[in-house]
Image 1 (cartoon, one colour):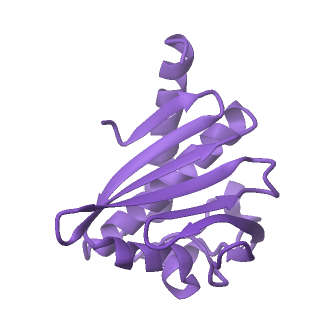
Image 2 (cartoon, one colour):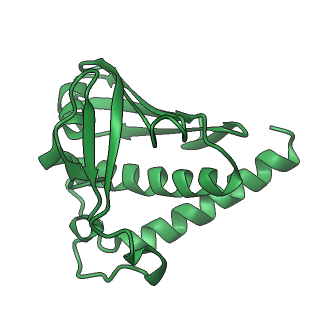
Image 3 (cartoon, helix red, strand yellow):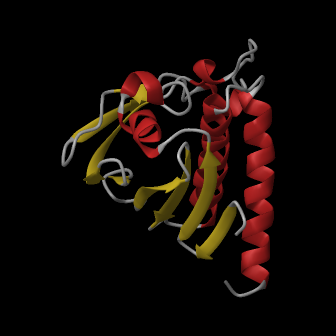
Length: 180
């Protein structure tokens, strides 16, 4: 199973094996202090409630790495998303942009005693540009989570993000030429 798949023109799927049990991974999804280390801080997530996501990617690189110019305007941006599914420690989902950009759904599966298979399916994305943006973002943020749980710091998040964007662009091009 590839780490990133384009399932439909509005749906992407990313899978990662993480070095922690599902209960630990769950905490990294829903607790703001842990979530900010790989994605976005803000507020803790609770069933049926709004969750604030504060984006400050300075937290994601071990080295002092400046924001690329095209992303600098988003530093400190706050997203307010709705928790639409909450089944600890198995399923966590949020509607994105009041549901206008679909739903990001995380599923956690135990892999032996101390590993988790995380499956993220983001469906309802409105077009190729948002698909590339979400795909590159999710791919790189989940790579940060994977490295964090493995005890390996990400030196430069933005270099990882650029690689992720290229990987997603290639997957999108492949999906469009294969009819999927």
